[in-house]
Image 1 (cartoon, rainbow, N blue to C red):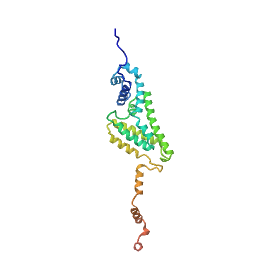
Image 2: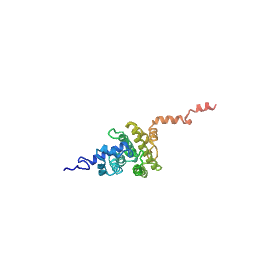
Image 3: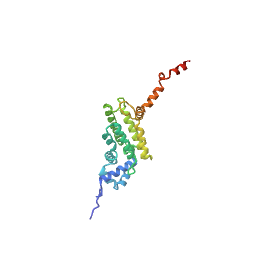
Image 4: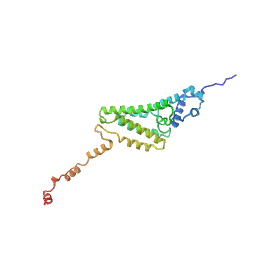
Length: 243
């Protein structure tokens, strides 16, 4: 008599299943994604899910690792590959605008969105640690630029890194609320104006203004100087004024 085979189906692909789980958590967050949601999306029963991945929390841990080296890897690459912290953050924000609004995937950042209404302390702590680790990476890069003179000595590295983290989190939520890539890029551009551009401490706006003044027409500067110098006026005019 034939016996019914139990366990995962022969066609089960663990990597494909993990990708589906990632997208499910990304779309719905950790807390509101149920085991039933996962089994339905993965096309397997609960026993097969537990056999392949353990419980929901263990599966989510694998999902976070996969996300960090795939969809969420652009931030680390930008900081590692660009010559300065400012250039790295500018690229990071620009790529975030594209990634967070990509129509081929859930909008926003998984690490940010999954924390919404999270009531599981261990998961909440894991997500917080990942977000803080990203901020620490930015801070380390900013401090390195301060040390080598690429940023002013009085730059507050901790505040600047946390400010950038807040911008990223805001962009993630804005994308979930319907903001498009162009709108997020505008946010990124505005946020970069808060950055000092060199050891003299000028921001991008003040640097542009100063550079424009430095390259003004010499003849115009001479005319302005003459107009402001009373000693160059006609002596007869002085006599008339004092008469």
